[in-house]
Image (tube, rainbow, N blue to C red):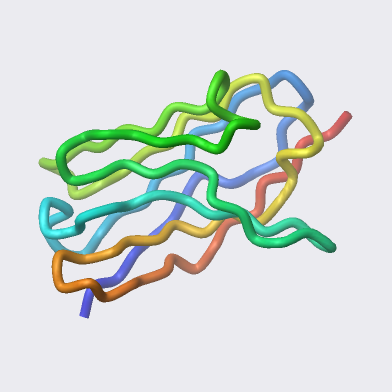
Length: 116
């Protein structure tokens, strides 16, 4: 079964940057879409960014100018560079993959905390 391992959460001051990584236990070329959701207390879970097996990207409007998602096929890893972070970005970020077989898999989640 596909497994997703996340890393890169942490605490950062407003205006700072973090990099999140999500490593798939299988060839990520077999995953149609990978990306991150985030869930802040009291808020709905929202989609942050996605990247397809072909490299096409999509971003939530609130992060498009500041976040960049990319993939390293050789390492079966997707990365998300998060720049100009503000306290509204504080949330648990969950990596998600949709396989070519249309199964959905979730990472364990990592906490991002942005101090003002």
